[in-house]
Amino acid sequence: MHPRILLAGAAVAAGLTSAAMAAEYKVGLIVPTSGTYAALGAEISNGFNLALEHFGSELGGDTISVLIEDEEASPQTGLAKARKLVLQDKVDVLAGIVSSGVLGAVRDFVHQSQTPLVVANAGNDEATGERCSPYVIRVSFSNQQINRPMGEWLAKQGVKRVYTLAADYSAGHQHIEAFSKAFTANGGEVVGGAFTPFGKTSDFAPYLAAAKAANPDAIYVFYAGGEAIAFVKQYDSFGLKQEIPLYSPGWLTSVAYVHVEGAAADGITTALNYVPTIDNPENKRFQEDYQAKHDRIGSEFAVQGYDAGRLIVEAVKAAGGDKDKLAQALREVRFTGPRGPLEIDPATNNVVQNIYVYTTEVEGDKATQEIKDVIEAVRDEPNGCVMS
Ligand code: PHB
Image (cartoon, rainbow, N blue to C red; front, side, top):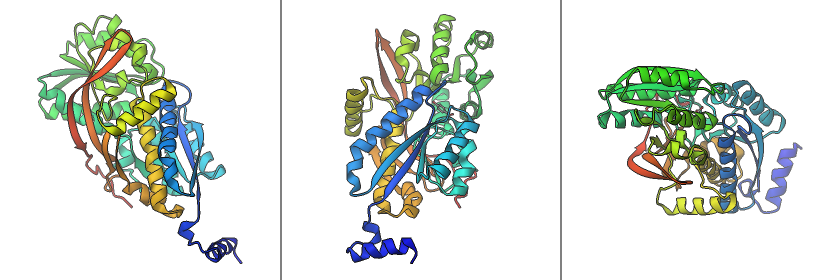
C-alpha cells in the first residue's frame, strides 16, 4: 500500500479525519541580514517571531518552524536562496523579501513551483500587477500604494515644483514614477531628478548640488536603510534642510534608524502604511511586547514581519492541516493589526490598507511621529493583473 494511504488509514482507525491530523509547516524567511538593508531584515524577523509567540498558540496541534536566509538585496542571491529553501529544505511557504529586485527575480520560481510567498516588504508593483500570481501574497505595500497618495497630497498642499532623487534600482524607479504621475495629474510639475547608484553612493553632495540648482519648491526622494541615514544627514549638513523642504515615503526617517539620524530628521514629512503612534489596542500590544524584548520601538518593517507571521498562522488554521489549501487560505485572511484593518485584495493579492501622512519630530534623543492625514483603505488598480 502507498505510505500516504497507510497514514490516512491509520488516522481513520484512530478516529481522526485527515483534516484533524497535526501538520508541520516549514517557513523559509528570506531577508537581508547584511548590507544596506540589514536593519530592515532584522526588524522583519523580530516581528515575525513575535507573531508566532502571540498567535502560534491558536494552532492546535499544527506547528510552524522558521528557516532564515540572507537575500543580500541581490536578485541573484535571493533567487538562489528561494530555490534552496524550497528544493533542498522543502519549506511549505516562503516569507520576507525586502528588495523589489529580489521579488522580481523570485516571482517565476515561486509561481512555477507553486510555493506560497508572503511578501513582508518589497513593493515591486509588477508582482501584484502584470506579473501577479496566486502564489504571491503581499502583506506589506506596493510601491505605488505609498507614492500615489503622497503625490496627490503634496500637490493639494500647494507645492508646485518638485525635484526627485532615488536609489537606482527597480523600487527607486517605481516610487518616483508613481509619485510623479499622481503629482502632475494634480497640477504639480517635476522639474528634474536623478537616480543614484544603489548601495554604492556614500557622497550625495553632487546630487544635492544639482537639486539645489534646479530651484524647486520641494525635493522628493526614495531612500531606505543605510542610504536613508547618509542622505538625511548630508541633506542637513549641506544646508539644504533650511532652504528646501524634503518629502519621501516614510522609510527615509524610519524608527528603525531615526535615532541615528537625530536632529537631521526633525520636521521631515513622509507617508507610510504604519506609524508607531497609531492608537489601537493591537498596536499597543505589539509595541509593548516588542519594546520589552528588543528595547526599542517596533518599526513598520517589524509590523510587516508581524503581520506576515499572523497571516500565515491564520491561513494554517483555516487550511486545517491541508497544505494544498494554504495559498488560497492566505489570500482570504483579513484582520485588524497594529497598522489598522487589512485585507488581501483578491484581484491582485496586494494588501488593502490605510496610508498615514506624518511628520517626524525629534527632541534630544527622542523621535515621535505626528499624524497629519490618514488616507483610508488604499487599494491598487489591477494594473494588468489577471489572476490565473
Ligand atoms: C523595495 O525594494 O521594494 C523597498 C526596499 C526598502 C524599502 C521599501 C521598498 O524601505
